[in-house]
Image 1 (tube, rainbow, N blue to C red):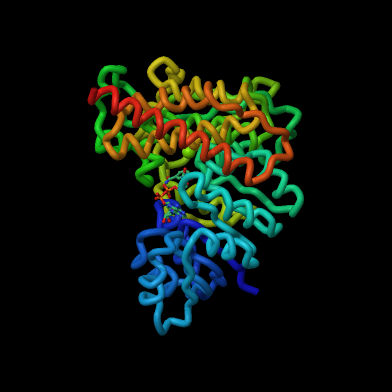
Image 2: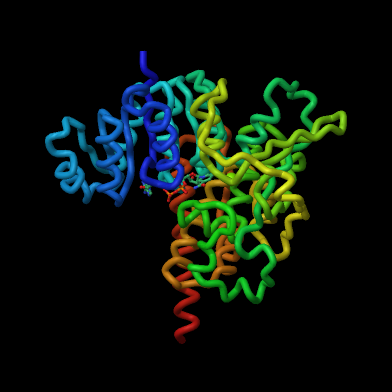
Length: 394
Ligand code: NAD
Ligand code: MG
């Protein structure tokens, strides 16, 4: 029987790479594609759905229903629209599900997918950051196999394979440092959107590219690692490594360190999750270490990149602090993209939300709790952004 697969966020950067690998591995002949989902890019969503003969294509945007229906007319592929349709699509039985929606919007479909007891390939790190306890509870209850797709966490997962968990001493997450790696705070204060999106090594969606520039991406990944590998905050280190060749490392109690290396191409981590527990040939470049000659490493600078400090702060606070951090960061990023605040103001708004809002929650919290905390954090930042504008216009 063909493996049934669904891709949430198939039109994004991770989604397109996932579709690429599935197509190269036989497409509709080799896989039974259940659901593909997107948001605004209806033409691409319809094209993917036809090429892979999906059962259903879903756009997150209710206002795009007619456009999607028109694009799929006569194909026999079902069209659906809106956030509820996304959750319904996640409930359709599948053996392998890619979670690659960007942001907290991915949480509800990811939770639904986790209830299936199949393989959940998780690119949407925000699910773990916002609701780590809840997602892991669903995963455990259903016997779902959770496979990290974030390149750093895929690296750690690969380094841990076959090792005894008792021997794990520390996890070392590498960070490229993004486009502002060597910028001063004054320079960063004036950074434009175009500069923030121009990542030196990785070709990614707009929002994660901005997160890389601010190192909020690494902040999310530190929290993600805590949940994925069940480790203490002081066991997680961040190491800036500009070449993005060493994807991450694991240190063991005997002093040994195992690293996973590869070219900066997300198809490595996606393909690993797609073919796990096997390895298959992937269309990624072969590493030539002699040509690279040097690999550089340095400590992460929490002075210039306050996101690194805020991740620790959120971990110490516990409860739903990850949901506060992420929602405040998403709202602050919306304001930065709209030109309403400066690049460095994003961290300031996040810290204010962490200080102002209560993260208290017992570990049995529900999705409704997370949504409420998320909304409070967004409202806090939005009000603060508006206040700042009023002050500067006064
Ligand atoms: P992207 O912006 O390129 O794509 C996002 C996808 O989500 C698209 O299909 C889009 O249509 C969909 N989407 C957007 N808003 C939505 C909403 N409100 N509701 C439902 N769907 C919506 O993002 P990306 O770079 O592919 O990142 C996807 C996820 O993978 C993120 O969580 C990101 O942190 C993670 N990730 C990405 C990379 C990368 O290289 N791009 C690497 C590691 C982790
Ligand atoms: Mg990553």
